[in-house]
Length: 637
Image 1 (tube, rainbow, N blue to C red):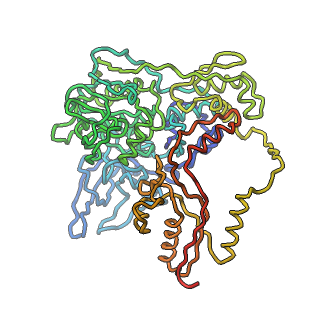
Image 2 (image 1 turned 90 degrees about the vertical axis):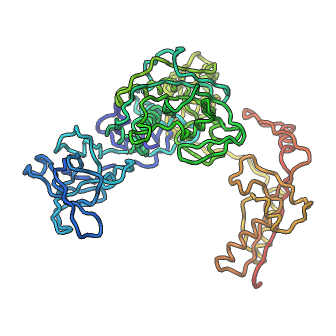
Image 3 (image 1 turned 180 degrees about the horizontal axis):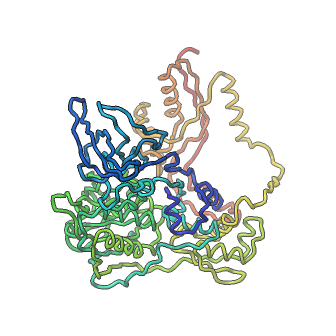
């Protein structure tokens, strides 16, 4: 998650002197992994200004098209005379507003600008592209063409927000709320002890019967679906500079105004959204499981064959989107250049989908998206209506649209999650006396409602699906109070009994083989069943009976080994291919054989030691795992 500091300051009043490095240290102290702080425009030096192209002369006789331009830069060059600039780009015309860097300036990367003779003319500066200014991908190739309303001579460094700091945060799978400015702002506010301006606190109209029709036939997969409609959008409207720049700094490419707004709100609130061209949606929007073998062409242009477990968005024709992952090409928002003339009416979808379902679909289709990344980590279901409202507001403001009065909201009833915790439980876990006041304050800061005295009844906020038991709440208190404040105490281990017979035998075998000149080559225990054909095993060979993993690291190796030879032969082959031909390799390790009758494994308790019966039951649920030794040799002894 990339977080521009200028954007973060909208929600938390950080002291003006705080730098990105200061915020990084604070967020790390509350448990977020802030990997880097990118200094945007740190080595940029002006003058960099808005200019207007006055004339363009095509220069002939060169290998590539070259243009000699005069550009009005106002008084920025000290004379008020037009600036003469040589440029090879062709995506601008006379009268366009462009970004001009003048002699004496320095562009990102230490690129100093001076007047120089090129193609038989003297070029006094450059007309700039987004790449040259270090802005990131803006979805276009060539020169930046600015909207006409910007005055000639205006400082473009400030206009294009080129100087900023961006925190790059590695979000762990349990902290889905941190994949949003809202979530990061909450953590920042807690770390600094400052109030938070929650961008999700919006006035949202009540649901009514006039909204776009929605039918949910799979409430376990989709427990909330909000639909809003905006009409009369100007297909010619373009994303303003501030919107494009925030998306670029967050690592996203601007596409078109409607799509940019949905991406912006997703970054802001963490709620993925989708906008449909209403004229291309036929009938009610539905949510159901796909039929096995059903087809859908997604926005990336790939025709996909669906699985019966996939959750799909439908209209009267069939699937129009892969729920929580990617929309369909049939209902895509079209810009003004489209043959249909561009989208004027849109239906906005803000829904909440089951995390496991979305994760499996994204993996099945090898289609990870910004939406699936958030849904599979847990999105705040209560934020859907606010995100839809925010999208409507921006479409009205920036695209000249009109908000339709209809509000559709389909919600499966659910109760808030509560956890009972002894008030001193965090103290016992940490070995520190926090006291009731600190425990209650810290839990309230993360969004919990807390009641009770000695026994606290804690209602978990909707954006924290990772808080499920007392130890999770203890962890929140401990991390916010500071891991660095925990005392360091060495455990006192009891006197041991030495190595077991199994361990001694294992080491003795390893030492004997190493002493005889063999080199140990441990391998992964995963195999594909085709190796048995390569080894020439008979069809009824017991080695062919394998234990298969439900979630293998690689689909090509979904089984556990029944012999050590495939891994060793693979190591032998790799070494031989790299020029080492005299080899003696060995491995000692477990092999896995399925049991004829296998019981289901019980979930063991964590508040006490498991009983002998529970351990025996768990062992009976595992495959047989004898320890084998194997060697392979090649070349001269």
